[in-house]
Length: 76
Image (cartoon, rainbow, N blue to C red):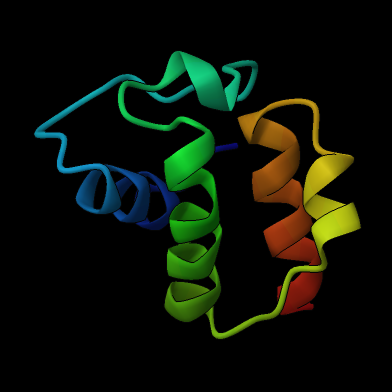
């Protein structure tokens, strides 16, 4: 499940007022989330959740839902 905190972090970082973020969504389907902004987005999520994400962990995420699951696993 995509949390409101996760969604707000993405929207804030990409300067979007609103966008439907679902678990099956791919990062490149979110306006502004391109290869140039990818590193900034991951850094923003790390800062928001006070965690560290390894590059290989992020690369293994097939969609936004899996990225959310990865973050949740770091919080346990």
